[in-house]
Image (cartoon, rainbow, N blue to C red; front, top):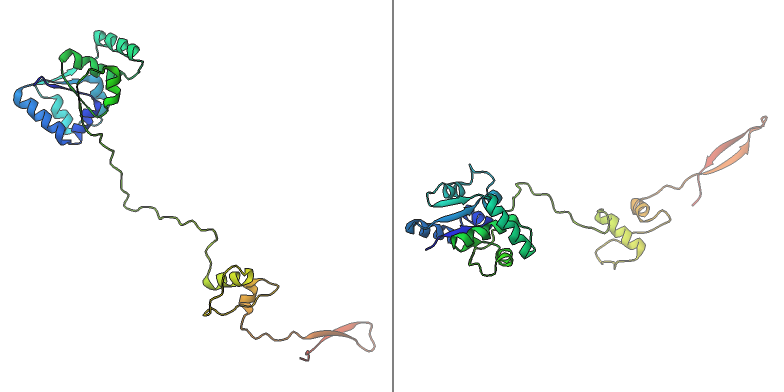
Amino acid sequence: MTGVTFDAGGLIALDRDDRRVVVLLARASETGAPVTVPASALAQAIRRPERQARLSRLVRQPTTRVTGLDRVDATSVGRLLAASGTSDIADAHVVICARRAGQPVVTSDPGDLSKLDPTLTLIVVLRAEPALAVSRNPPRERRLRSNPPCSISARRACWAYAGAAPHHASWPRLPTGPGGPRASLRTAGRRTRPKPKRSCRRVPGTTHTSATSEPSQS
Protein backbone atom coordinates (compact mmCIF):
# COMPACT_ATOMS: atom_id res chain seq x y z
CA MET A 1 0.00 0.00 0.00
CA THR A 2 1.41 3.35 -1.09
CA GLY A 3 -0.57 5.33 1.49
CA VAL A 4 -3.33 7.87 1.09
CA THR A 5 -3.76 11.63 0.88
CA PHE A 6 -6.61 13.33 2.70
CA ASP A 7 -8.55 16.34 1.61
CA ALA A 8 -10.86 18.34 3.90
CA GLY A 9 -13.83 16.03 3.27
CA GLY A 10 -11.83 12.95 4.18
CA LEU A 11 -10.60 14.57 7.39
CA ILE A 12 -14.13 15.57 8.35
CA ALA A 13 -15.29 12.00 7.69
CA LEU A 14 -12.56 10.73 10.01
CA ASP A 15 -13.59 13.23 12.67
CA ARG A 16 -17.14 11.87 12.44
CA ASP A 17 -15.92 8.28 12.75
CA ASP A 18 -16.57 7.08 9.22
CA ARG A 19 -15.90 3.33 9.30
CA ARG A 20 -14.29 3.17 5.85
CA VAL A 21 -11.78 5.88 6.74
CA VAL A 22 -10.99 4.17 10.03
CA VAL A 23 -10.30 0.89 8.20
CA LEU A 24 -8.03 2.66 5.68
CA LEU A 25 -5.99 4.24 8.45
CA ALA A 26 -5.77 0.95 10.36
CA ARG A 27 -4.44 -0.81 7.25
CA ALA A 28 -1.94 1.99 6.62
CA SER A 29 -0.76 1.74 10.22
CA GLU A 30 -0.25 -2.03 9.94
CA THR A 31 1.79 -1.76 6.75
CA GLY A 32 3.63 1.42 7.72
CA ALA A 33 2.27 3.28 4.68
CA PRO A 34 2.60 7.08 4.82
CA VAL A 35 -0.45 9.31 5.21
CA THR A 36 -0.26 12.76 3.61
CA VAL A 37 -2.30 15.63 5.05
CA PRO A 38 -2.00 18.96 3.17
CA ALA A 39 -1.92 21.87 5.61
CA SER A 40 -4.60 23.74 3.65
CA ALA A 41 -7.02 20.79 3.95
CA LEU A 42 -6.23 20.48 7.66
CA ALA A 43 -7.05 24.15 8.15
CA GLN A 44 -10.47 23.59 6.57
CA ALA A 45 -11.28 20.58 8.77
CA ILE A 46 -9.94 21.44 12.19
CA ARG A 47 -11.90 23.77 14.45
CA ARG A 48 -11.45 22.68 18.07
CA PRO A 49 -8.40 20.42 18.44
CA GLU A 50 -9.19 19.67 22.07
CA ARG A 51 -12.49 18.10 20.99
CA GLN A 52 -11.41 16.57 17.66
CA ALA A 53 -9.41 13.71 19.14
CA ARG A 54 -9.25 11.62 15.96
CA LEU A 55 -7.73 14.42 13.89
CA SER A 56 -5.28 15.30 16.63
CA ARG A 57 -4.23 11.66 16.90
CA LEU A 58 -3.78 11.39 13.13
CA VAL A 59 -1.49 14.39 12.77
CA ARG A 60 0.66 13.15 15.69
CA GLN A 61 1.32 9.74 14.13
CA PRO A 62 4.93 9.16 12.99
CA THR A 63 3.75 8.01 9.55
CA THR A 64 1.67 11.16 8.96
CA ARG A 65 3.22 13.94 6.90
CA VAL A 66 1.58 17.37 7.14
CA THR A 67 2.67 19.20 3.98
CA GLY A 68 2.77 22.98 4.11
CA LEU A 69 2.10 25.37 1.26
CA ASP A 70 5.57 26.67 0.54
CA ARG A 71 6.85 28.76 -2.37
CA VAL A 72 7.24 25.85 -4.80
CA ASP A 73 3.84 24.33 -4.04
CA ALA A 74 2.16 27.75 -4.14
CA THR A 75 3.48 28.29 -7.65
CA SER A 76 2.29 24.85 -8.74
CA VAL A 77 -1.14 25.48 -7.20
CA GLY A 78 -1.49 28.78 -9.08
CA ARG A 79 -0.59 27.17 -12.39
CA LEU A 80 -3.05 24.32 -11.80
CA LEU A 81 -5.86 26.73 -10.98
CA ALA A 82 -5.15 28.74 -14.11
CA ALA A 83 -5.14 25.64 -16.30
CA SER A 84 -8.40 24.26 -14.85
CA GLY A 85 -10.26 27.56 -14.53
CA THR A 86 -11.09 26.97 -10.85
CA SER A 87 -10.31 28.92 -7.68
CA ASP A 88 -10.16 26.47 -4.75
CA ILE A 89 -6.61 26.66 -3.39
CA ALA A 90 -7.08 23.81 -0.88
CA ASP A 91 -8.27 21.34 -3.53
CA ALA A 92 -5.41 22.27 -5.86
CA HIS A 93 -2.92 21.80 -3.03
CA VAL A 94 -4.39 18.33 -2.34
CA VAL A 95 -3.93 17.40 -6.00
CA ILE A 96 -0.30 18.62 -6.02
CA CYS A 97 0.53 16.61 -2.87
CA ALA A 98 -1.20 13.45 -4.18
CA ARG A 99 0.64 13.67 -7.50
CA ARG A 100 4.03 14.04 -5.81
CA ALA A 101 3.39 11.14 -3.38
CA GLY A 102 1.67 8.93 -5.97
CA GLN A 103 -1.25 8.29 -3.61
CA PRO A 104 -5.03 8.11 -3.98
CA VAL A 105 -7.07 10.87 -2.37
CA VAL A 106 -9.71 10.22 0.30
CA THR A 107 -12.47 12.72 -0.45
CA SER A 108 -16.19 13.31 -0.08
CA ASP A 109 -16.42 15.61 -3.12
CA PRO A 110 -14.89 13.90 -6.15
CA GLY A 111 -16.31 16.38 -8.65
CA ASP A 112 -14.02 19.27 -7.73
CA LEU A 113 -10.88 17.12 -7.72
CA SER A 114 -11.78 15.51 -11.05
CA LYS A 115 -11.95 18.97 -12.63
CA LEU A 116 -8.40 19.64 -11.48
CA ASP A 117 -6.99 16.25 -12.50
CA PRO A 118 -9.22 13.66 -14.25
CA THR A 119 -6.50 10.98 -13.93
CA LEU A 120 -6.34 11.19 -10.14
CA THR A 121 -7.30 8.06 -8.15
CA LEU A 122 -10.07 8.87 -5.67
CA ILE A 123 -11.46 7.01 -2.66
CA VAL A 124 -14.92 8.47 -2.17
CA VAL A 125 -16.54 8.49 1.25
CA LEU A 126 -20.08 9.60 1.94
CA ARG A 127 -20.58 13.27 2.65
CA ALA A 128 -21.42 13.67 6.33
CA GLU A 129 -24.54 15.73 6.92
CA PRO A 130 -24.38 18.23 9.78
CA ALA A 131 -26.30 17.17 12.87
CA LEU A 132 -29.49 19.13 13.47
CA ALA A 133 -29.77 20.79 16.84
CA VAL A 134 -32.90 19.55 18.58
CA SER A 135 -34.55 22.10 20.84
CA ARG A 136 -35.92 20.90 24.14
CA ASN A 137 -38.83 23.29 23.87
CA PRO A 138 -39.73 23.48 20.18
CA PRO A 139 -41.96 26.39 19.20
CA ARG A 140 -45.64 25.76 18.85
CA GLU A 141 -46.87 25.07 15.41
CA ARG A 142 -49.04 27.93 14.28
CA ARG A 143 -52.27 27.06 12.60
CA LEU A 144 -53.24 29.17 9.66
CA ARG A 145 -56.88 30.15 9.90
CA SER A 146 -58.88 32.19 7.49
CA ASN A 147 -61.07 33.59 10.29
CA PRO A 148 -60.17 34.54 13.87
CA PRO A 149 -61.14 32.00 16.54
CA CYS A 150 -64.56 32.49 18.07
CA SER A 151 -67.04 30.53 20.14
CA ILE A 152 -69.27 27.88 18.63
CA SER A 153 -72.43 29.86 19.37
CA ALA A 154 -71.11 32.99 17.70
CA ARG A 155 -69.98 30.93 14.72
CA ARG A 156 -73.45 29.43 14.35
CA ALA A 157 -74.96 32.89 14.52
CA CYS A 158 -72.64 34.09 11.77
CA TRP A 159 -73.59 31.13 9.64
CA ALA A 160 -77.28 31.73 10.17
CA TYR A 161 -76.87 35.43 9.41
CA ALA A 162 -74.90 34.89 6.25
CA GLY A 163 -76.71 31.78 5.14
CA ALA A 164 -73.38 30.28 4.09
CA ALA A 165 -73.57 26.98 5.95
CA PRO A 166 -76.31 24.35 6.17
CA HIS A 167 -78.31 24.27 9.36
CA HIS A 168 -78.02 21.16 11.47
CA ALA A 169 -81.15 19.71 13.01
CA SER A 170 -79.69 19.69 16.53
CA TRP A 171 -78.63 23.33 16.44
CA PRO A 172 -81.09 25.91 17.76
CA ARG A 173 -82.07 28.40 15.12
CA LEU A 174 -80.82 31.80 16.11
CA PRO A 175 -82.86 34.85 15.12
CA THR A 176 -81.19 37.69 13.32
CA GLY A 177 -82.05 41.34 13.50
CA PRO A 178 -80.83 44.80 12.60
CA GLY A 179 -78.05 44.58 15.15
CA GLY A 180 -76.45 41.59 13.46
CA PRO A 181 -76.05 37.99 14.59
CA ARG A 182 -74.21 38.82 17.79
CA ALA A 183 -76.90 41.27 18.92
CA SER A 184 -79.57 38.70 18.11
CA LEU A 185 -77.56 36.10 20.00
CA ARG A 186 -77.53 38.26 23.12
CA THR A 187 -81.31 38.76 23.07
CA ALA A 188 -82.29 35.31 21.85
CA GLY A 189 -84.71 33.60 24.23
CA ARG A 190 -84.81 36.55 26.61
CA ARG A 191 -88.01 38.27 27.70
CA THR A 192 -87.77 41.98 27.12
CA ARG A 193 -90.04 44.47 28.87
CA PRO A 194 -91.74 47.02 26.62
CA LYS A 195 -90.33 50.49 26.91
CA PRO A 196 -92.82 53.06 28.33
CA LYS A 197 -94.06 55.77 26.01
CA ARG A 198 -93.15 59.28 26.99
CA SER A 199 -95.76 62.02 26.59
CA CYS A 200 -95.56 65.72 27.31
CA ARG A 201 -98.32 67.68 29.12
CA ARG A 202 -98.66 71.28 30.12
CA VAL A 203 -98.50 72.05 33.83
CA PRO A 204 -101.25 74.54 34.77
CA GLY A 205 -99.99 77.96 35.85
CA THR A 206 -96.56 77.55 34.27
CA THR A 207 -95.00 77.84 30.88
CA HIS A 208 -93.07 74.60 31.25
CA THR A 209 -93.96 71.13 30.16
CA SER A 210 -93.25 67.95 32.08
CA ALA A 211 -92.55 64.53 30.64
CA THR A 212 -94.45 61.63 32.06
CA SER A 213 -94.18 57.96 31.31
CA GLU A 214 -97.20 55.98 30.41
CA PRO A 215 -97.15 52.21 30.12
CA SER A 216 -97.66 51.02 26.64
CA GLN A 217 -100.69 48.97 25.98
CA SER A 218 -99.86 45.80 24.23
